[in-house]
Image 1: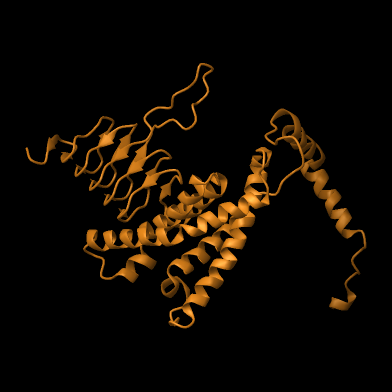
Image 2: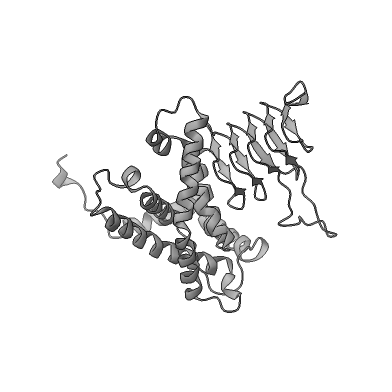
Length: 316
């Protein structure tokens, strides 16, 4: 049969197919039950008009733009020179910050922060401006992280290799940006950025975690750092390390207490090897070494070595 001999499609073909699918899958019943779940039995939407959620795609583009502005010759354009590099950085910042401001405002509306007296679009602009003012400081911290990686990894041959090739470096770039936003109460946006980093690197750092200068994550896959963890300067950790909570306090009604200080404090110059699990609001003393695959739930004195077999002072 020639193509010209095929019957012309009916104007009602699409409607017929939709009706057939509706009957085949019992869509009318399922749609009605989902509506009942959404609006009545399992509703999670606050009252009022529906609000648009922040865009994960937009946030990924924002992260890329900010990273290019921080490291223009490594993540931006290799051929930038003294005459055009500032223009390039300004251009990237302009687009990234405009978009970030929109996402911050959208995120606040989506979770209901617009109910806070005085919250307006101007609040998102002020927050974004404050965030932007801290970018030079963040770059300084990231350079210290880069140097720590170079010193701490004998396989590292140069800074560019670490900057564009190490997942731990990518994770800490994202975290330092997310932490700025978290500290300024743009918490939904900060959490989404942290999850973008988690997806890209396999490293899960809550944006609330406080991390000092010269931080190095070697290899990195499976690292988990909780919301209230505090990490000092010049700390090095390896893959599959967990800085987590030992238990979750509840109030008199049995509800979890939010914001409780439940994650470890890791002081300066600590090394934590692969697979170590450190739980609870405990302190790992300055200069200590935590061996691989240990389970730590009590304070560790300064300058200690903790292994599966024993715990002893470095001077002992």
